[in-house]
Image 1 (cartoon, rainbow, N blue to C red):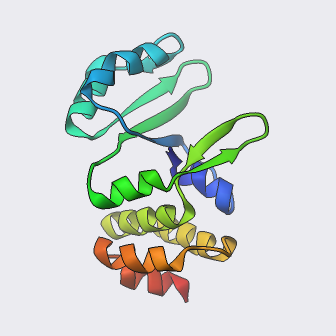
Image 2 (spheres, rainbow, N blue to C red):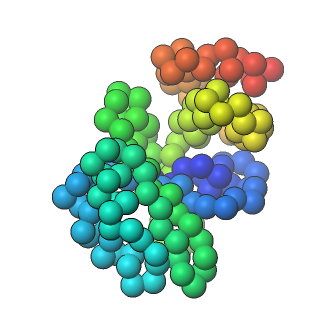
Length: 159
């Protein structure tokens, strides 16, 4: 599932990004196939992949010709991250499709990240999403924002 600024570009205003964020649902037994899928044309550390899959962390690959970095985030198994992954949306990108985080979950994740890092960029992204997506599922946002500890931030950015 694509997330981060690439997903932001699908729902709101594109912005320059240094990497692509991808959430994956897999475990340690998938390490070899993940490395094999990228090693022909990308830098990928087999050790980093194995560690990330074991710890449910993240690893990255760098495409050698394009010099594009992709951060692979191993999906956590808590209730919110399971719901977020189930709600992903398939988007037609003119010839191929890709799965993207739903806009509500992108908002929630950006608010959590902003709270953790103090990032104004994340807050600005939230404001852009709130303005650009007219049919947000506010029942879903009202249910999860307090549980994630970002209800106040959501209310603030909504004004």
